[in-house]
Length: 196
Ligand SMILES: Nc1ncnc2c1ncn2[C@@H]1O[C@H](COP(=O)(O)OP(=O)(O)O)[C@@H](O)[C@H]1O
Ligand SMILES: [Mg+2]
Image (cartoon, rainbow, N blue to C red):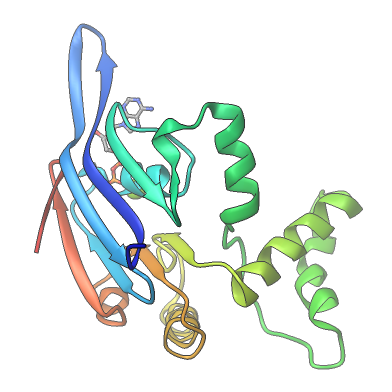
């Protein structure tokens, strides 16, 4: 058994654009040990979201292997991948202040009452959100991107607590140097290659 939760080996991701081949990830390898809090930085278009999507099971590589928690994601067909994703990957969709008189479920559900989601969709979102806090390891694509400073600080504090006190492994893509500072280590992606 390896200590890595995520093991990316010699991954290439290319897109065909017109007659040209666009190389987005170029022979990229990455190990994320359990308990890590890794920030991934890099210029726009460097492939950060593409890499996160491979690790989150939203996409598959053109070549190379992507193993998450012992599962070879690159070997799964799209049906198997979406099944894997539904039981392993959570999405952070909203943050807000909690009302102490409500149960955790009602607290999380409250802001969703203002949306067009159906009751069963709300239930699914709430369970996903609670799952992130209680169980799942976390991938975050620019979690503080659109937020004011105070809210960004709250989110970063929460991520640090989840990592430090609850042992969650966190892989966070960010442009924000303050966000990157809350991670244990920082890697840079440039033109599809990782550097330190
Ligand atoms: N589905 C796609 N088809 C073609 N090109 C894509 C697709 N998705 C991403 N790209 C290209 O891949 C490159 C990396 O994109 P992305 O991973 O979103 O970068 P980042 O998140 O670092 O800004 C960009 O040049 C983008 O235009
Ligand atoms: Mg991106």
